[in-house]
Image (cartoon, rainbow, N blue to C red):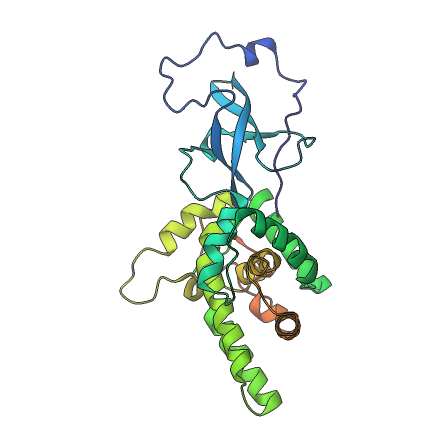
Length: 296
């Protein structure tokens, strides 16, 4: 979700704009060409290499190539604040990020070798499919547009929050089936655990990071776990990432098919209650009272 600007030169700039004659005296925080860095791409962070650095309009801009991506893809233009120094020991390669999330929420035998992980994941990703209803896909597009294009944010804390939505689904299943099976309860607990760990690492756009830091500060009156603060908007983003997360553990095909059906049913539940669970409009970076309420 979201996209990065490419390294296409802006023809409207002048020679003075790209001149390096007025470079800052200090080189602190400047990344060199060829240097390995950590770079944000939407809400995700990856290992990357600086392909080109330029000083334009009194600020540094960089063109990076995300390591492991298609070598023929256009290098992305990244602002200085979206780059971090990398000493080789941090988590944020795509594979490592996923592996850090999986152990806490999924059961199964861990892969033993890096080559084995990549090979097994490739086949698992063909199996792991979670179809998202068309109206919820549009919700994801609107969500992306509000945050990345209109500079608006979801007002926090959300009501209902993720915990509340999961509880409403439990009530819905009990009313429909007459009882709650253990496997459904286990899957819902897994979703909550996935969400709490994945949100700060995979589910936030850059413009939402400061809000996250503020919203999850210790509070005497409530829990600061993401599932008690965020709502349907961010929960839906998790379903986009779930196939990638589930691919890193061994799951029997029969078990996965059962899980898949539960995920599909839960998404239909979200769709059925879309006007109640999702906001129809987000708020600006300086929220005003009385706006950003749900449709229903």
